[in-house]
Structures are given as C-alpha cells and as structure tokens.
Image 1: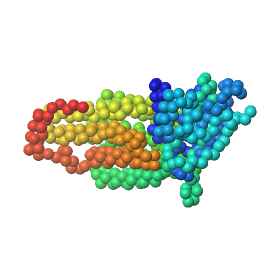
Image 2 (image 1 turned 30 degrees about the vertical axis):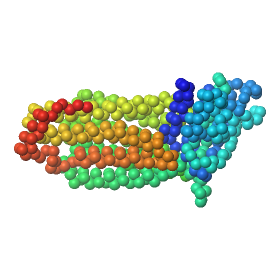
Image 3 (image 1 turned 90 degrees about the vertical axis):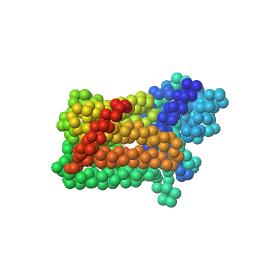
Image 4 (image 1 turned 120 degrees about the vertical axis):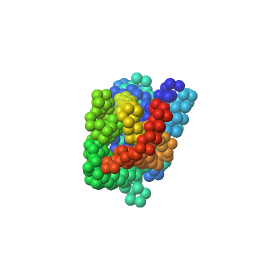
Length: 436
C-alpha cells in the first residue's frame, strides 16, 4: 500500500505542477529509480513525440539482462491508477508490461555496443499524457541523456505548436493581462498627479509593484509565445524569472508596509515590523530560487521533490508572516480609539484594516485553493482557465488595495461630525475584542 501511494504521488506531482512541455534536454546519472516522470503534454488528434536517448550506460553490462523491462512509455493519470492496481494484484511485474500504456521503446532495441535510441511517435488519441521512464530491474543504475519534444500539428497549416493543448491560449491571455496592468499603471499615475499634495511614499511603492507585474506578464507572454512556435524560450524565461523575483518581493513587502500603516499612518517602522520584513524578503529569495529549480529541472531531477517541498513551506511561512503587521495595526487602533478621543476616526481606520485583513486572507489562501481545484478537475483542454482565475483574483486584489489606500485630499476617514464621533464611541464600547 505504501509503495502504491509513493508511485501515485510521484506520478501526480508532475501532473499537478504547472510546467510546460517544450523541447527538453535531461541528464540522468546513475539513477536506480523504478519510475522517472519526464514531461506532460496535452495531445490533440494530430500530436507527435520525438524522443532521442543518447549516451546510454547501464551499471550492469551483462548481455543476459532482460532489457525489455527498461524503457519509455506514455500514460494518462487514469491509466496509471489501473497500472498500479495491476502491479499490486500481481497481474504484471513491470509497468512496461501493461496493456494500458502506450510504449515508446525499450532498451531491448539496443544492438550490441549501441548507446542511443531515437523514435518519432505519431499520437492520434487526444488526451493528457506523461512521458515516463521505467526501470524494473532491481539495483540497476541507468545513465543517459534524454531529449524530448512533444507538439501538436495545426490541422490546416501543419505548423508545430509546442504548448500543451490546454495551454496554447496562454500567450494571448498574458498579452491581454499585461495590457490591462499597463492601463492600470497609467490610471494610478494620473491619480498620483491629480492628488500629488496628499501622496505618500507608499503610493509610489504601489506604482512600482504594478509596473513590475506588467513587465512580468509581458515577459511571460513572450516566453510562452516563443515556446509555442519554436519549443525554446530564447532568453525570455530569464527576464521572466527576474521580474517574477522582483514582483514577488515587492508585493509581499507592500502588504507588510500597508499592514504596518507605514507613511500614511506613521513615518517609520517599529522594531518588530522591521523583523517581519527581514524574514519575508530572504524567504521570498529562497522561494524564487526554488521556483526556478522546479521549473527548469522538472520531476526527473532527484532533488525535485525536495525543492517542491521547500517552495511550499517557504510560501506558507511568507503568507502567514505578512498577516502579523495587519493584526498589530488593528490592535493598536483599538487601543488608540479608547484613549485619544478620536473614536470615529479610529473606528473607520479599524474598519479599513479589518477589511484589508480579510481580503489578504482570501487572496492568499482562498484563491490558491480555487486555482488548485481548477487545475485538478478541469479538462486538460481548458487548463488555461486556472491561470485566468488566478490572475483575475490578483487583479481584483490590486484594484481593491489601490482604491482603499488611494491618496485623497478630503479623506472621508478623517472628516467626521460630533454625532458620528458619539456613535463611534458607543460602537467601540459595545464591540468585543477582535479575534482572528
């Protein structure tokens, strides 16, 4: 049962990761794993796989080895579950023996002294498939270089499309989103110019976050566009990682700064607030490094699962850490409301920070759950919808943050009359301590 769970987890870890199956080159060195998943791809009815394996070396050169138990195959997630059942029930002893997979080739095809295999496989069954290597010989270590290319042919022009069938829309989606954020940046610049007498430093920081997000989306659009046409990113992936790194750090820093009330409630940060930043920023650096390793190596790497766990752990810690300054601001405002005689003003500020606290939680946690659910249950043809859902949630968060903390000459949070002051004071008296 444990081995069954391990095999299923290893296989599905690839299917649930957001990696694109462009042309891949992988190096496997002295690896004795029974199952090594490589690329996953959504084929149409006009799909092809090109697989070139070179520098093949087995730790046991015995010519009597049953090399039919070493090789590559294509498999869907549903088929893999049945293959595991066949292994558990003893119907087969190796995944390559199952009639539920689509074999590519086995090492039995190697002629004496031959160290390479190449095959082009036409794939007419539309579905989401994973290229998998199986080694069913105990203690046998395999070394090899693997170059794989999976693509679909356009029905009319026969042009190659290296993006999975469920992700071929992504270049247009990212281009459109970059234009939306470009317009959002323009609107924010106009607001800052019109309200320049009441602009704080935090508002310029917001502008920087929006600009970095725009550049991030533009680079990602170019990255996916080149991959779609040629199978390679042509350097756009490097720019994407740079802007993704800067965007991630500035966004989390912005949430922390807004949570502390920096620049618009107070001109400086307290010691404990600085410590939060000192925790969040280095963790974001680690998270971005882990993300690059995850994207560039793929699940065939022996440390891929470890990097995946590091990324998830660091991401959760960062998401929790950014909430503390908001909680501290809420408690400070409650205490101030009872002592400085400005109950209405403080109640309005308190309401604002509570709203922001709830929105941050929804954005960080609820959005991720929705996106994960869409990736899991959506047909492979519509996997791009999970990207759209996540990006729309991010856009809504940016708009909410900008609107609620916009520069305002006559801010309604600070203009109150005596009746409002008395009502607010009563509300604060009746209100229980805010609990998280």
